[in-house]
Image 1 (cartoon, rainbow, N blue to C red):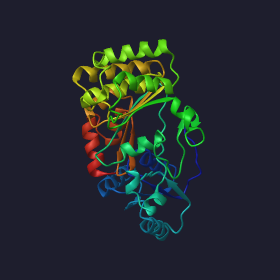
Image 2 (cartoon, rainbow, N blue to C red):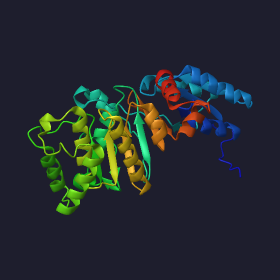
Image 3 (cartoon, one colour):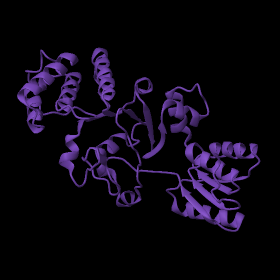
Image 4 (cartoon, rainbow, N blue to C red):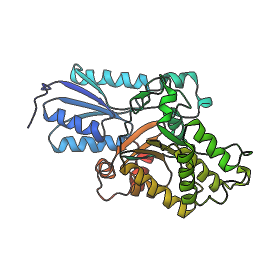
Length: 338
C-alpha cells in the first residue's frame, strides 16, 4: 500500500544519505515527486547513489562533506537553494559522537558532541566493533557511568543513569578492557567483596563462585593472592566478579583478551545461555570472526561516529554484497566511509 507524503515538487535535503536508511528514504521521496539532495563523506558512495537514482529516472544533487564542518554544511544548504530555488525539508540522518579518553577532550570537542543513538534489546548479543581509538571504551564508560556525557541520556532497564546511578548499576555486570584489581587481596576475598556490595546471600555467592571459577579453570587458584595471577587468570576473576549478582545486562569490554581457548569457549556459551533467558550482552571486540558468529547485531564505530548498525544480513545489504564477511564490511566502512 502506497502512502502519499505530500512531497510532490518539494525540495528535500538528507544528511548522511549515501547509503542505508538515508539513501532508501531519499529514493522513496524521489518516487513521490520530491527533488532530493544528499550529503555524505564519501564521494565514491555519493556517485553510486546518483547512479541508482538515475537508473529510476531521477536526478540526485550531492555534495561530499563532513557534517561536523558547520561552514560547509551551511554552504551545502545554500547550494541546494541556488539549484532548486528553495528548501522545504531538512532531514538529519547523519549521527556523530566524538568519543575518546576524557583527559584528551578539548572544551570545543565537548561542545561538539552529538548523540550516539543506540538501543540494545532483551535477548540480544550486541557486538561493538571499531579500530583502535574509535571510541569503543569511552562509549562503554559512558554507558556504565564511569564517564558522564555532556548531552544525552543513558537508560538501562528504563532507569536514567544520571538520576539513579546506583539502581542503574545494579542491573549490569561490567568487565573493563584491562583487569586491574587490588593485588593484596586473594581471589576469594575480591569475589566476596563484590558479593557484599551486591548483597548476594552466602549460599548464592558460594554456588556462583564455585560455578564460574570451575568453568573458567581458576577454582584451585582463587584462594591465592591476586598478585600471583597471570593476566588471563585476572580476566577470569574479573568476569566471575561481574557475574556474581546475576545481572540482566553484561557489559564486556574486550572480554576475550587473555583468555585461553577453553575459557573463551565457556564465555561464549555463557553469553548465549544468558541471552536465551531474555537477558542482554553488550560487548566490544577486535576479533571479527567471534562477532560474526556470536552476535545478533553489530555496531561499527569509526572516529567517534556510529557508522553502521544491524544484523549481518542488514550490513551486507548496506554493503550491496550478499556474500560479504563482517571483516569485508568492517574494512569497507573504516577505510571508505559513508
